[in-house]
Length: 585
Image (cartoon, rainbow, N blue to C red):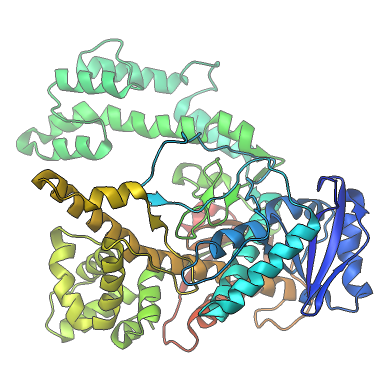
């Protein structure tokens, strides 16, 4: 059963909510309720309808907005459907016939709203990205939302693989639920420890518009070392001129270029290192100050919690993005400030080598699947390469080769090792190369569950069709190869994102059920509080840590079975229960 929640006719969602029950045999409009009564409605309505609450799928225009009043009232829900996110997927899915009933915006999460830079109407792109509303936009009335739900469900039923697409939409919606809960719950953060670290590395908090004392002193030392008093190392142009005047012949101020120049010095390397060491240290401390300094603490840490604001499916592959605050990573320099509450622990679970395991499962390549059945896929690939007399006999080379294959490397060791991969794993390499060929030809590819890559835009089509001169033909080849690299990786990275959604969804379900095996008992108090790509962080009572370890581990395998059935590919994790996030890395 689906229950759609949206604005009553003529009302904003913040004023009156109208529930519309959608069953297989039609729709039923119930009486609207004021916003203050929404939590009670969600808590009581399934019982009034004679339905198990865990079997209801609550439908919102946007979960990030609609779920917030329920979280604040401590009324969680088990399942949901995010119409905006699902519309974005269905409207671009290959082979799906779909006519939307109403446009549903995809807003940024509040209260940490981050607007993207404006794009000029005449500004073209190489790919036609799916449309998605952002910011404050009008939410369609509940009955329009209900018709849109019916349109989406019908489109799924008509698709070539309805089971997979339905799983994708459910997983994406569940991801929105999890993102809202993480935003609400927050990652424990000790402001006092963070400020002490800043004071130790940068000095006391400076006045507005000034550098921290230790950073200022370092800037002055850099000017003295390079013989340019008053040098401003915050300006790449000034810094590059100062470096060149001192004999540091580099074309940019990037750390890699500076280290490369120093390493080429032979006997002169110590002097070269001395010239650039202060610059490298300044770059590190400047990044700390600007990315995770006092202003970051003021804006993002409230009541002892960092509240990550995620954009679910914010990347075209389906990976999550962040709306600011560095939600997609916690830099090593500040990880020790992430501390569990007294009597609690952080459980940090990191999945290993997910993308090559996804490749093995998608392609059905038995040899690569065999390598992926253990804890270290790259080591197993190297062993298979050794037995075959291949140049992949070392783990480091096996890793370079596989990553290069998935990301479309065309030069260096990765490219040289591709023929060895073809001989060992013909089905896996065939999948990647077929995806690349479709991209080079201007076609689209899809993930395992059906998220489809963006279509080439008119600018790309025009540029690749132009072979009127040698220069234009070269540009066409470059653009086609770039598109092929994108589609080659899209199918793998996008499917890995789907696995991560299913993993988190299983973790959430098992936490709510209170046991690793998924059989209902009393819910655990532990909650998901952070996510980045292939890593999750949970926070809860210390006595639950053993059960949580089993939950995250078994949920990873369950996610693999959910996507790939009995494919013999494992998804091993490294799991640590720690007081400080720094202790898990």
